[in-house]
Image (cartoon, rainbow, N blue to C red; front, top):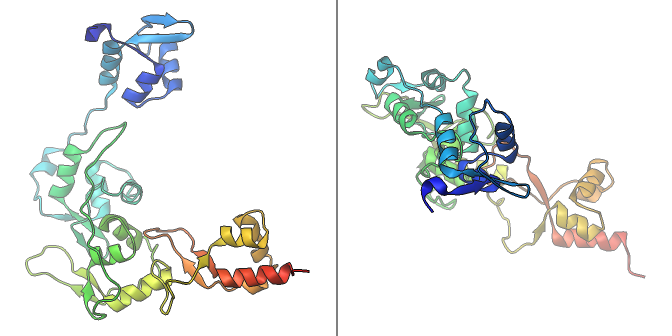
Length: 301
């Protein structure tokens, strides 16, 4: 079968061209949409010529936004704030960049500098704008892996943004920097040192003592608390609810919130999802403590 003779049904179009069945139905029923006519039917199943469908989507593909010559010819090493980057890219709000950094790690380039906020070199942004994927199924190369960081090293050693991001469980310095800039890591205090590099046009780099970062990570719950026994069995709300005979975790937390479980008011630990920028901490209790409470509530005859 030649390329011109190949037929595709709705499911195949959805899979190959990243669209939806309702959109195909809408285009097919609208004679002004430019969607090709049905080439074949089998009962209620419709088929279209693949080459015509491909041509339709090729014509709909968005054109890449051409940057002005003044932008392309400007100093590629000039550092730009997030607002200036948004203006360069034609975005009306900086929240577009925040969404890239928060929701799609590795898609938007990481900041070249971090001072009072993330800053990018003009050349970095221009290169990304010229090569970014378009609409549809986007793919991008993963960002560089963050270095593994131990909580047990020299407490006075200074850690940079990448090391602290790794300690807190973030997948990239970009997502960590964005969360930090937006005040979503309140456990981490101001840097212990702002290190200015000779010859750098950017601001100083943030550095934290390992002891500062580790203590903050413990408060956040992404590292075990000091003195925590790794062999100690801690359970979350779902398992505690099962042991105590509640329907689910929400029922147990509701009872806890209404003061019906005073013995569990103070959890034994808090766990915060590693890398999470805004989710609440999850309460955990010692299994032995939950089982003792269950025995008191339901004494064996």
